[in-house]
Image 1 (cartoon, rainbow, N blue to C red):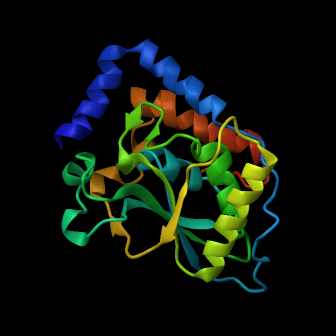
Image 2: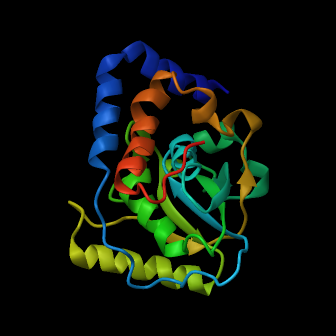
Length: 225
């Protein structure tokens, strides 16, 4: 819990300077992107699939996808390491191989995997930052896509190549693409954190702007919750 409170206290005591920098970073990470040329079609019937993505602190990524049409559930957790090291204190030390990640459950008849990745790259985080995101640093804050099958791998790699070739960002995308071995749900106090603490300085100035960018850039997919 010590690193959890350190994150909160750091933003609180440093005040508006860090808060404004975080808000600015969130605004700058909102990039208008083309639709993926490689994607799965919308399913003919309602169903349930999952996507596991990592893009810095899971609070903000979770907050974004909880407002996406077609997404039925979002859970914060850890991927990339072993089950025995899947706890916040251990992951925060940066030596477990885990990344803070979210598991997104969605209806493929309403939204495609490629469309989820477009949101992920455009408003949920900055995919050009290596082993960091905004004020948070370390490999556990890395940008990563954990694919569940060959189709997800094909779509993820295809979209990254497309965006790099189009040079839509100021630098190359550093997002890792790797097989999903397991997803470990994070502690209960991390779940729906932004929704439960909207006035906390870290959430207010770093994560809520991402949700606002989702509303602005994807009005047809934004839902109020």
